[in-house]
Structures are given as C-alpha cells and as structure tokens.
Amino acid sequence: MFDVLVHIMNYLVNFGVKFRRLFQIISIISSVLFAEDGPVYHVPIHGTIDMGLPHYIQRVVDEAAEHNAQAIIFDIDTFGGRVDAATQIKDIILDSKVTTIAFINKRAISAGALISLSCDSIFSLSTIYIGVDGFQVPILNSLNPFLVHILN
Image (cartoon, rainbow, N blue to C red; front, side):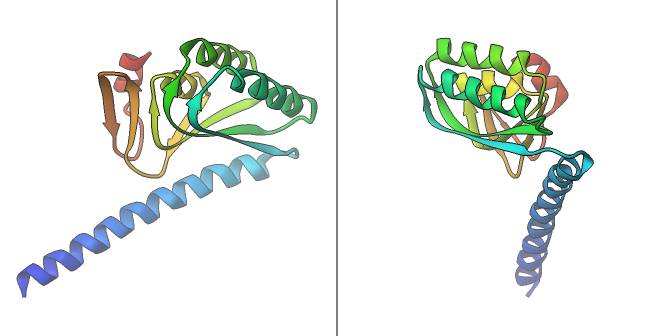
C-alpha cells in the first residue's frame, strides 16, 4: 500500500513540476505578446544546420525589424551542423534590434548551443541537453547561470 501511495505522490509531484514550467513559459510568452503592439515571429531550427539557414534567419530578422516585431522565438532542436553557418547565425542574432528568445525543445548541441547562447533569453519545458561534442550538459528546467558562463 505504501508503494502505491509513493507512486501516486511521485506522479502528482512530477505533474505539478511540468505544469508549473508550462505555466511559466505561457506567462513569459503572453507577457511578450501583450506588452506591446507588434507580431512575434516563430522560427523553427530543427535538424542539421546547413549553409542555407543563415540566409533564412537573416530574412526573418530583417522582416521582424521592418514590422516592429516584439520578439523572435527560435524553436531549437538540433544536434548541430556546420559551425560556419552557426557563426553567421550568431552574428545575425547578436546584431538584431528585435528581442530574441531561444526555446530549446530537447537539445541544442554544437552549432545549436552557439545559436541558443546568442539569444537574449533561453527557455525550455523539460530537461534539455546543451553543449558541444563530448561535453553535453543535461539541464533540468532552467539554465544555471554558472553553466551558461562555462559554455560561453
């Protein structure tokens, strides 16, 4: 009987943690959405990062600036790819006048880590993996500022 109660309590605690993070993400995104007038751009960065992606990111950033966007949310789930492409994307993001948000959906490895760390803010819903080949750090729920310093 005790095992059943422990299992139920673990389920409720895990559900509460997941629900709390979801509520935090929704709160942050809604505060961005309703703080000012202007669109919010969603940019998926999934799969391998190649040399076509910097041109796409540049077009999105230019369009967002032209339309006075509130923010650009980069939805990141990648093992990486070409570092020269990621470096170009990093420069585009750092030069952007629009607020940039990285939403890491599971992983941001290698080139994905570089892109994520270039954004103004980083968010996730669950445990994520961020880092470079051979040094991947599982981070539970939110980024530890010390780890961000190490990864920079």
